[in-house]
Each structure stands twice: as structure tokens, then as C-alpha cells.
Image (cartoon, rainbow, N blue to C red; front, side):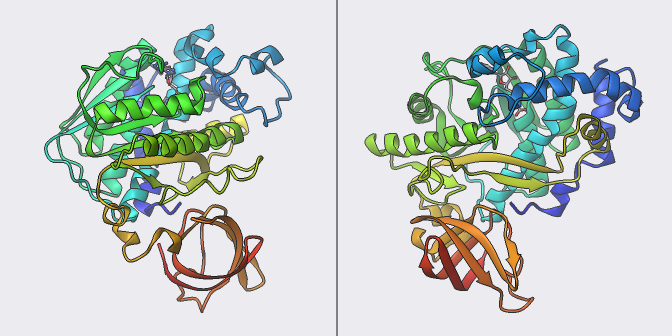
Length: 430
Ligand SMILES: C[S@@+](CC[C@H](N)C(=O)[O-])C[C@H]1O[C@@H](n2cnc3c(N)ncnc32)[C@H](O)[C@@H]1O
């Protein structure tokens, strides 16, 4: 996914200094300089980063698990993991490790998705102050991601906003309220505020009480995989809530891990959302991203395939240090995502970069492109599913000379079958 340079560069030493000062003020770390202390990171943060990393990764049955936690844990399924904040003998440091190490990458992922909407020409329509909600907010990660996205790739969000933050862990929620206050102000959104709701959300009981208001922006970041229900059940619950609580011209953003099991679950959710919305004849239901249409999923067509995006950023220096210590490399961040719009306007009106094309005339790169001689080879996905394709650029000036995962090809001329497609011409690369 192409991300504006200003956004990819926004998490440098200035971000480190902001989060360091904030953590010191809240007495989460001994001093604002703690993040520069190898000893502090190695002793107080690293063990908890390793633990969280294993917790998050072990959910994917495809992932090898060589060491550490007992096999019984692996079989407990997502519902058995939900209370992980309390699972620890040192929940404060576990929360701190999440805040320092997992929150910023997720914040960046959300900001990148927001910038993708902007890249495709999306503009904010609702009038009045923004009313937004984040589910399973943790430290208000996604709300802050929208602030970063809007700062560096604005789509026209208003200067005033209220963010409802829903979270089952009280201490995390309190941290989220404080962090959002500091981060919003830092990003230039001094009149964005939060309202905390400490509660355990339940799919069976409906995600929101019937009396809850409507929201224009609805976010779930790394939350759905914590629910154990089938995608069909989650799809019905989401549509029930969106019918009542997502405002006209509103947007819902769902971001999930790129791991095979969780990514496939999101793709199944997409399939169920489309089918259920059609059954209910919901004309406003529009899946916008990443697929630019309601076609059958190209990845789900195969039993062991899945689909994810990737974004690259400049990590804060302390995060590079944590990654070095933990043997992680989070310079490139993978994730899976869906963006839904509640609008009766066409997809081409919502995303003007697609104007003048029909769904069949758009292909999205769903893999990196690598060179085979002078040709680039990659996978694209479109209305007719996924295909392996090659393209030979017409000189260095060709905007498709260096394709990337996430690029959208408009009106490509395709020849050949799904295993070997040759693209002779691309009208436009977005
Ligand atoms: C992996 S964290 C993600 C936090 C944040 N959204 C982010 O992207 O960094 C998942 C969060 O969802 C919360 N959560 C999980 N199940 C929940 C439920 N049923 N009700 C409320 N919060 C829940 C957890 O406490 C945790 O803070």
C-alpha cells in the first residue's frame, strides 16, 4: 500500500519524545529518557513484548510454535485469550509493553488505511462535529490512527469530534483516554475529545444498546479476532448495529492480523456481510476496500490462500531497539482490512479515482511485484478472481514501471488465462 512519505516519517524522534514524556507523566516509566535506556527496555519491556507476541501469534494454527507456552494454551482458541491483561503476574508492565510496542504499529496501520481512502479520492461528507466509535479500543489506538491519517492525508474531517471508546479493561481504557487527549492535541486536533465506556461487548447481546446514538465513523482494530463466533454470526451482528448506529455517509473500518487463519476469517466475514446485506436488500451497504466491489473473494476460492496488505514506515528509534532485542522486524507491517461505507452513492462517486471504470475494469495487486527480466510478475485480483500476471513497462516514465502491492490498475488489457496473464497496456495506475 502506498503511504504518503510525511505519514511514514511521522513516527521519528518527535513521536518518541511525545510518547516518552507522556509515559513519564503518567508514571508508566521512570523518566522521559527511559525509552532511550537499553537496560530499561531489555529488563522492563522486552519480556512482556515477547509474551504478547507469542499470545498474538499462537492464535494462528498455521504458525509453528516451538517453545514457551503450553500446547493446551494453543488449543484454547481466541475466547480463552480474551482476559490476557489479567493473565499476567505483572499486568502494568504487560499494558506498558502493549502501549509502547504494539500500539504504534497498529496506529500506523489505521492511519495508512485512512490515507488509502484519501488516495482514491474519498472526501468526508457528513456535516457537523465528528461522532466516532472504537470497539476494543485498548489505548485508543485506532482513534489516534485516524488523527495521524487525517493530519498527513486529510479527507476533510471536522475540527470538532467526540470519540466513544469501548473497552473491557478499565486500566487500558483510562490509558486510552489520556493518550488520545495528548496525541489528538499533538496532531492539531485540540477539539477532539473522548468518552470512555468500560464494558465487555457481546455479539449475542448486540454490539451496542438499542438506545445508543448513530456514529459516522466506526473502528475495530485487532478486535474481531478476539471473538469466537462464526463469521456469519458476526456479520449479522455488525449489520444489525450498522442499520441502527452507522450514520448515512458513515464509514466502518475493520483491521485484523495478516496471519492466515485470522485473515481468512475476515474474508469469510466479508463474504457473509455481502450475502446478508443482499438478503436484507440494504442498498446503502458498500464494501469499498480493499476489493473495490462485491465480487466473490479471489483468495477464498482456494482452500489455503489468504489476502493481506503491507505498509512500510520509519519506526520510532526505541521500537527499533525493542525489535532488535525481541528478534522482530516491524519495519514492514502486514494486516488484513475491510472498509465499508453506508451510502447510496456509487462506488465511483465515493472513490473518484475509479471514475470512468466499471468493476470489471479494475485489478488490485495482491502480492509484491518482482522482476523477471524486463517484466514485472505479480498477482492481481478483480471481478473474475485472482490471476498471476506479467507486465512490461513502456519506459521509465510509465507510472506502472514499479508496481507495488495494493496498486490499482485501471482498464488493464489482459491476455491469457488466470495462471499466465499478460497485461499489454494499463490506462492508469492508482
Ligand atoms: C489486541 S487489542 C487491540 C487494541 C487496539 N484496538 C489496537 O488496535 O491496538 C484487543 C482489545 O480488545 C479488548 N477486548 C477484547 N474482547 C473484548 C470485549 N468482548 N469487550 C470489550 N473489549 C474487548 C481487549 O481488552 C484489548 O484491549
